[in-house]
Length: 251
Image 1 (cartoon, rainbow, N blue to C red):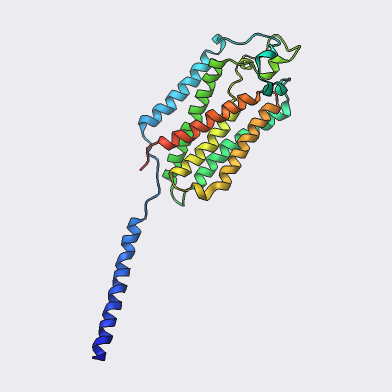
Image 2 (image 1 turned 90 degrees about the horizontal axis):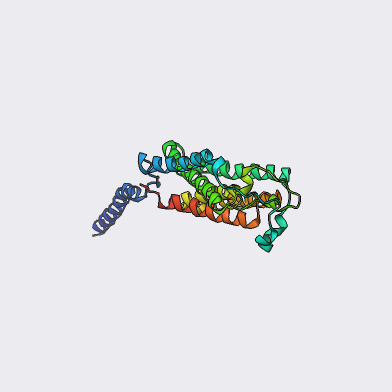
């Protein structure tokens, strides 16, 4: 009787142990594979091609585009929040904004590469293709929005401003530096969100958005943009940076 009871206990224990061993491969199969973006000739090449074509067309038509000729322009035409930004360009702040924009863009791209596991080089390239699409689309949209809005830069409102300046002085809104920096930060966050890893990289995301905000602040300090130019650029860049990876096909 006792021997039978012991044998029954051993059989039950062996059954549980066997079930646990068999369950290991099943549980391993249930772990979802890392999300990867689908990159194909269509539509990815078309998106990159359209953005590039828009930028090339803007360059070709540069001398034919209408531009602002007022010198100085009328201050009554700008909002009160923008008036403090009126002034001649400041080169140190302008250089700082260039460095900050580069830091946000290159930093986001580098972090995208580092966020993948070891050996996932193809997946990294797919991430970078999506990231490049974001930057290219943002640049194209920013460029043509500048043409449509045709807003003078702050230096055009300075009394005694030169009669002839660069054609770029007619295209202030939105800020291209701000749109690109915020697009890079938002794209990084969106790509990680699609991969389910957003919560593990909050510090890096905060740092990228801080760089983007500093970029915009330096553009205002350099008298190259009004605050509302920067706000518009930040909104445009963030929208494209988040939306494009969010709607991109994955597998």
